[in-house]
Length: 377
Image 1 (cartoon, rainbow, N blue to C red):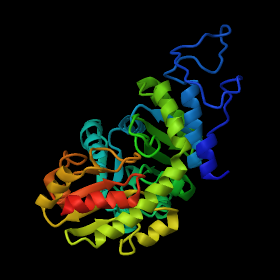
Image 2: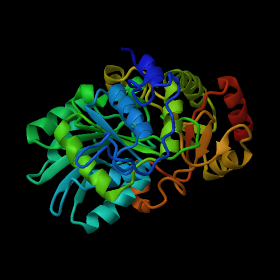
Image 3: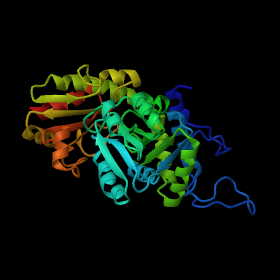
């Protein structure tokens, strides 16, 4: 079945005999048992809920996994994932990750003895050189946030398999509409469902999708124990959002290609970071493993003053954190998404006072360009 069809029809809906087209919102916190030792399959909503179960099956179908778990936020999903590791374990990670992930890794996880080695995962040799006997996982974003570097997932999977550790891929930016990491060898896929999956900036959520049932079983134990499960109503919002995911992603991608080209030609824009540009260093990898380039663009202006002026002058575009919604958003990584990253690391990665990150929405591309044009004047 094609991805666009799965987006609309999700999973088999056995939760109602009424013929309702829309999956019901089951607000029940607990469920009655038919008798001692008997269950309807639902006992307590922290463990499972029919609305959330439908959503999880939909995500598993979209990503080609054996199972998925829906969390209250993307960060709660990553937090649960880290419970798979213990003191002395090392995780190799992309050196250009979302700042919230790095904050979690370097503070919370490090306090429990889990260590992170950050490398440029776009270079497979750097991954190989970072492998140690106690390496337990490789955690990558591709494209990365916010510098849009791309990692060869199949190549990374080969390294992980050879060294017997897990490959974890954050697929938030491209979604299963454009990229399917499990088919390329990933063991676990992560999503901030708040972004493109929900698509309307109205619900926080996170997902873990597993390629292996044993890993899923471990994570379900962690899930029910720690309890950061997605609520029935937010599950419903995600189900509804995913129905239009495929057509939204096409429009995000179409707009971003047009806007990236326009930015490249603007005299006040010095660098444009977009995986779909022919001069992007990882363009061939993107073409090999992805069917689209997504809606995320970062660009560097000619001065800090220009960047600040854009943030203050945009009208149609909204100056806000987050990404992946139908509205175009502009973000200032230096003080927003990556504020907790040490200055020297930010600068090394290109996250400076001139950098802006654009989440291209589904408005008409020429209207977005007109707003950027007036803001850059």
